[in-house]
Amino acid sequence: MTMKHPHRPFAWLTAMATTAAIAAIAALTAPSLVHAKERVLNLYSARHYQTDEALYSDFTKQTGIKINRLDGRAEELLERIKNEGPNGPADVLITVDAANLSVADAWGVFAPVQSKVLEQRIPAHLRTPTWFSFSTRARVIIYNRKLVKASDVPTYESLAHPKLKGLVCVRSGMHPYNLSLVASLVAHNGEAATEQWAKGVVANFAMPPRGGDTDHIKSVASGECGVAVANTYYLARVLNSEKVEERNMMKRVGIVLPNQDSQGTHINVSGAGLVKTSKNREAAIQFLEYLASDSAQRHLAEGNNEWPVVASVSVDNEGLDEIGPFKADKLPLTKLSQHLVAAQKLLDRAGWR
Image 1 (cartoon, rainbow, N blue to C red):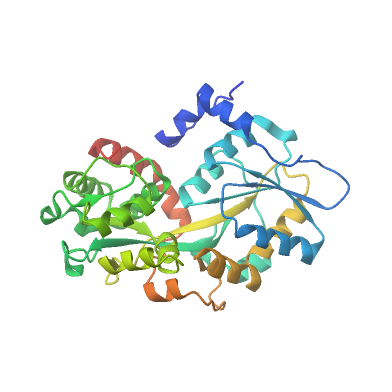
Image 2: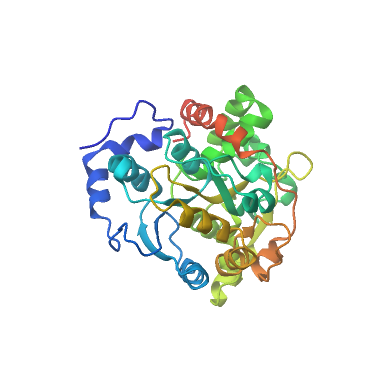
């Protein structure tokens, strides 16, 4: 039976109540999640990167704590945690993007965590009382070098300029990446101005929203799109590719780090929190602290093309180096979260679906 929730902040979560969504949840496979006397951590993960296997293995090697992992999409895992109730096995939920983490927080999934390690290592704007960021990716503008000039797209706001009519490709307005970006613009520019901007972007669409960042990189390179927005995680992956054709493709794509003269470039985060019903609280907090360690931070950057949140950690990643240093938006995640509902509503009104 699907649980009823009095507050479903975003339209993109409504579909989770369907029979198909529940069937998908039931179909998830994972090792048995148990509460044995051995030291264990039951991790619900919406990070789908093979490189994370080494991260989890290293944690077990360092601590002796066994990780039982359940993989799924963020919305599936959230629904599962709520359906499992107070006797559920989940100890930690880890996922990507502030929008997903904020929904979990709004649903009461996370418990407050007090940790001097996390407070000292993770910047204040990248953590909340209940969840913590452990890596970041910048949301940048990419453009076809033959169709558009870098000077045409110095800011997110410039994506609404009429000279880009028929050139802009984007993800769905319901995607968490866009919700977080637009929520940040509401925080900086106000809701009315951001809605006008969204209407301008919609007027510039080259095609209805579809596909993901990798699709848009290819479309910009081919000239099907003149401009798009992409996470640096995807760009660095292509720049570091062993395939010559992929590296050559990037020669046709320019990268702009937006809003360097104002608030800075918006960043997406990957983060985690302690599940309120955890039966292995000590192990869970130990895992969260491990994610902020030098070795884990370096792995996230070098193994998965994400920037560390701990400023003192140096990394070796040619793709990230090629994108270059930049001024990042330091809008506190707590403030960004306050504008997510407004962001979803104005995107709907603007016809960005």
